[in-house]
Every structure is written in structure tokens, then in C-alpha cells.
Image 1: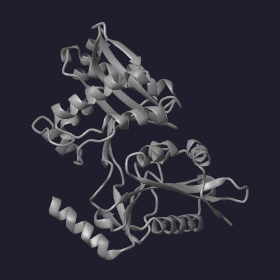
Image 2: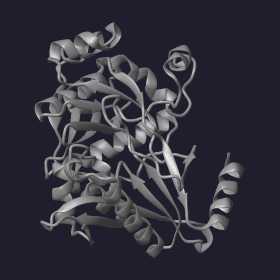
Image 3: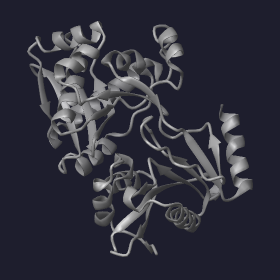
Image 4: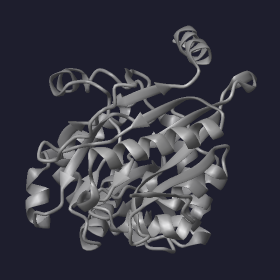
Length: 345
């Protein structure tokens, strides 16, 4: 018989770290990061007879306009110990999740189960959930297999990407893990990249907080590319379990011909491989099928199309997550939310 538990951050972190589907968005530190910038956070867990956590989820909450409650958000979970999995345990866990969501005045719960490889059993979607076209995280991505040698990883890339990496390694560029004092260099390049490519970026304090929560603990690295005294590019890459995620990348308008953005990405892939990761997630490309991506990547630059031309060359596999699903607690507020989305579109 499982027991309900509100785990501490340390208890939850220990459970996530040991889980085969450990994900950064389920880490306690990710909850702390989002809590510092307008989200609420709650953790739900069930324990077995030994008292150890056997299933659980980290939930995030975002206030809806006009004080209409919150949107509950469950990313890349819930997590269930495979040895303890059963329909009864899943049912008990969902019951606990819904109870906590209602306690936080959630009008609905948005659930993004994440990526499941063909060899993995996909989760059963409870009948109370409806598929939603509105996702929080990009549903389409590129995964690079890190189990091969570095030479084989390079061989899988297209010729242009390989050439640019080699060029970046011949230009006397320094690639190094950044210290906390280097954050202004990175955030400055993030601002430049956002302006150049017309997409929004976080405020500098966000990247500072992410650095403080993840880098000293070994769960992330900020890698900078520099030539002489000029910053050229930077990447913040995160890792947990067998997967690394390329979440934030930036480049300056200085000496772009030296291809520092390619060299720093290769340095991040090497960091992930040396850390023991078997998969490198490029995190976010347009939500289109491979044929459409190949047909349009040279002619489009809107949204995630601007980064797809870069990400496609790294020899990874295009894969789509299961998408998003909504469980509705308050039909009237949910209907108003859907109408507001239609008006915005």
C-alpha cells in the first residue's frame, strides 16, 4: 500500500537522479529556478513499504489572468520506479496529482510526458486527458547519439557542419568552462542573439540563477568561445542521467567568420559525452515532419526555423515528443483560456 508524501527538495532530487528517465525539468533545482521567476512549485510523491519514494511528480503553477486561478503544468513526468509500476500505483499517483493541483487553484493541468523512443513503452494517457495543440516546450527536436566515438559522431554530420567545426578549431579560439564572473559576457551575447534572430530571451538574472543552481552541482556547464579578448559564442548545456540538453545558446556579431558557434557546440557535445551521457538533445525545432523541414529550411527564418538550419547539420535524429494533454478542473475557465488563445492567434 503506497503512502502520500510531500517530499523535501533533497528527497525528490535523490529520486529523480536515480530514475532511468531523469529529466532536468523534474529536478528540484528547476522548480527553484521557475519559482524565482513567477511560477509556483509543488512536489507529489508516493512511498512504498520501505518508506522510499516509488512514484511522483514536480508540478509548476502559473497564474491565469484576472485572478482566475492557475494553470498547473507537469513537464517530462510523472516518474514511476519501473520495479514498482502497476495500474493501481499510476491511478493513486494521478489522484494525488489532481488533489495537489486543485489545492493550488488550478483550472486545468497541462501535461507533457516528453520523448519516448520506439523501444520504450509509452505512458497510458488517462481518458480524462484531452490532446492539446498548445505546448509549453517545443515538441520536435533533434537527438544526437553519443554512444559512438567522436570520429563517428563527426562522420554523421553533414559536410558543411564538419568543415565549420574544423575551421573553428584552427582559429586560435579558446573554449573554456565559464566562471560566475563570466555571466555578463554570456547574457550580453544572448541579448545580441535575440535581437539578431528576433526571438525573446530571459533577463540576465534568469541565467545567473540557472548558473548558480546547476553549474556548481555539476548538472550544467556554461562554455564560452573567445578569440583574443573577444567573446564569440556561448552555450549553457544541462545534463541529468543519460541525457544532455542544449537549452541556451548565444553568439556575438564579432568575428562570426571564425565559426565560434560551431566550436562551442562541439565542446558542449564533448562535455556531455565525457560526463557519460548517451543522448544530446538539441531542444527545439519547428513542429513539422522531416520532409517539410528539408523542403523549407532554406526559405524560412520565422520562429524555430531560424535555428533549424544550424541544428539539422549535426547528424542527429528528428524525433517528436508525445505532445501536450490537458485535464480540465474548471470547464468555464478552460473555455475562456481557449478563447483567449484563439484571439491571440
